[in-house]
Image: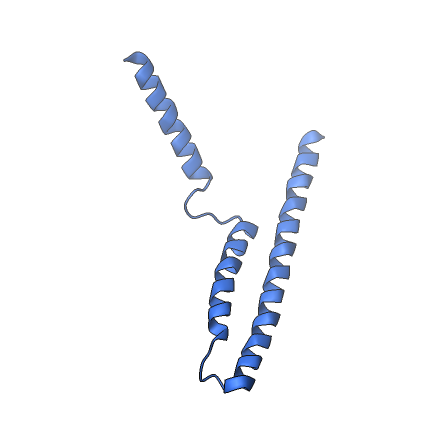
Length: 97
């Protein structure tokens, strides 16, 4: 019973993360479309300043997506397990020396 409740709670947290990501993505799109239109209206893209905002905020959106979809190319579960085993072997080796 407790395992089912834990599973439900983890699933609910994932759904909340996805909702936050989609909300951030929607606001990113709406605001940047508005800024692009404003930039076009003001100087017909002779100076595309809105791209700085789009690029900077886009980096944040990428990190939001990585967190929401639980993608971690550097420190995933396999890496954690390998490091734990490595540290345990190292400690065991030091104990026998």
